Image (cartoon, rainbow, N blue to C red):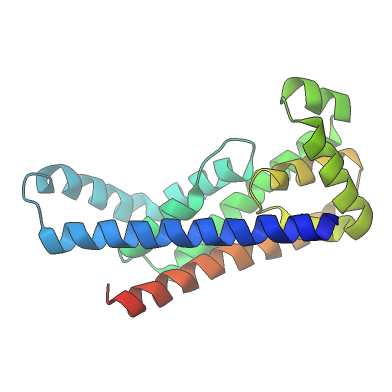
Length: 197
């Protein structure tokens, strides 16, 4: 039952992210095609800023996204790709930042208890029970699901609380996050090619 729930969450996540990617590409492409001159003076410095500091910015926002801060780093990743920044560089910056954020959650869990997490982070007990069941079933491999919204951060905190092997968790978590950002990059180029962006 638990794996079916995680599977449904992952499918919903991928569908939602795919929709966000399409929406951003469409809006960004419409701006370029329409070329609304009234917005151009405001947009151009922002675009240049992101081009100059894009990799650092991507890494920092992915770091925040990897912690308990609700930031949609995938949306920014697609924006950076739309600006023409290097796909491998953006994917690696996002993976590194998000992995470091995940390590922060894991270490936070290793210093905490379930009761502390329930109290200070206002995490619903239902999510803790769900994360606990997934970890009991899959062990350190559950870290590969740390990219799944809502439950991912809780999984990492619980892995820390349960004192699961640090190295194994970090490696599996990094591979899961790399797969996620690589999928988003590949989706971006596939959708861009399909719609001629």
